[in-house]
Image (cartoon, each protein chain N blue to C red):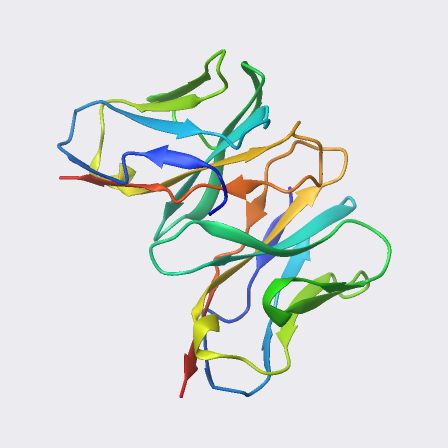
Length: 114
Length: 114
């Protein structure tokens, strides 16, 4: 158990819908990362937040957005969902997001878009 | 931009046999290197990482990896595998001086047979 929690574990929805994935980092960790794992693209970095502020952006679609709240939990919002958005979405956290610092991953949210 | 190549998508071995999972990376700057393991239906767990210093890195569960800068490789090894090592293994890089995002390889599925 990494100490990072993600809800829900599974999510089934339809194309065009909007969903919110939630992540609670390890106690004391200020930095949160979101990754997408799909069969064709593999594991890809989406976005990083540090203490409420966006720090780095990766291959995140404009239909996707994220935020980190004052209690440090983070939410990833996916809208206008397409079949290709079906994937496993991971959240990771680290203490301050320094380079080389270990990122601890949650169990993931498996999203299925029908 | 950096990239990671895991040369074998699947590696089947017998229990108690040695195993090597290969990883090569491409980057124009110095990197930090990581190996993560993903057990079925679970998140990613850090096995080991190389930041600096000794090029031979020891991790959890008896795994070790050797950083070879001239060959831009970071192969993962274990002298004697167990059934419980069956999982998917991901190599990842993070550039020094760049963002904190991890760039992952496509993964190697290790299957240990009795």
